[in-house]
Length: 558
Image (cartoon, rainbow, N blue to C red):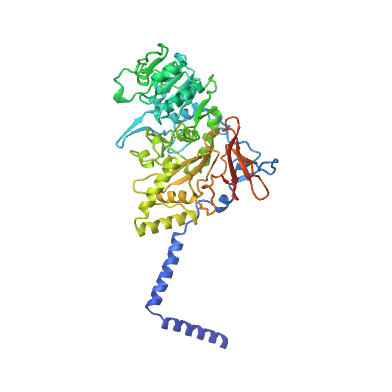
């Protein structure tokens, strides 16, 4: 007992001595320490995803061929399983347990019109399609009216002997409607990049052998084309409301009267009211024809012409739908804005994915012409945006200047970026009035696109309150080659030439072939990027640029 008495006595003396020396400074130190500890415990959040999922984002094949790396695949499409090739479309009356069809472009619009199929409070809900005009005016289009346009325009082009339809329009409802009109009426769609020099337009028409053009007045050099390209047989003007009173059916002198000129509005208005309301039936229809896209690597260079099958585009759409976690996928509550040109397959595929998901879609004709998110989102508050790297860099520059204006804003920004990079948690604060939750952007392989570092991407996530997915795109790949993960907020100190571009999607597999001094060794995989998959034109394409696989199996430039 004497031992325990001695211990208790010493403990009593220690406690008495401690509190005997207590003063104001001790109180301050204790309060600060207790407050810091309480704050850490109260605000602690689990990472948005497990760090192990970011540490190994793709799976390499167990065997590689001489002169090339292993074949890398998404964890969602492991080796031994087929790549994602379809939308699993269930026809009415089919068993819920039966495997659905891969589908084609027509199924995208059928799904947009039918609405949400899954049982729940949103079943049957459809998205809206909106045209944004200026800052205060937005026109909502009824889906039934667009269906009627799809049918009537397709029937008119077919009746006039059209076969290959060049679409030379800015981002608009008419562009999407013409694409679907071609799909439903067995026509070949040719999407031309908008606002190009006259000689480039004529060159693209010749190379694509287009016989019909759907375009807007003031942007298409009709007189020059009629003289220089005698194969043109039809021209359909998409006239705005303010110019609809003018006569647009005049044919330029020298065209020989061989061009049938009409306007979009006349085709629609001159048809019976009940005509074109029903989509053609599924039974007995042929597979939709190819969609031709022109890829311009650098200004002044001739565009590369690529033909994508409907299956290529559907595979790319399916991969983009799978890339977003189930709880965050697009739905009727989202407003999707393509702030990049729909002539880019990355933007086009994402827009079609939004339509298939029954999200609302907003079209702004100036959005694809200006590398400025402020201009692109004027008059609309989107939740999901497709933006160019140049637009995001401009946004970053402007937001950084505002954040550096005061010490408080700088400190707040540091806290948010640290929370992202170190804790893996997305900040919940957003700029006032913003609903933006996801930004999609892409590097164009070999096109000298401004590159986004991981530090810039993290800053943008903190500034906008939105997650960002950064993809690598190429001419012969519908959608994307690789794409960063939805929850990947990491910042790297050893970047070379910009951020990594993530792992392959579920529709692609990537390998690196030896290229000059860049070779695959036991230390790492380097070489020319080669991509395969059902979303690739011709099933395989070499990108002509050197890349490497990082330790986490994400792709980046060498």
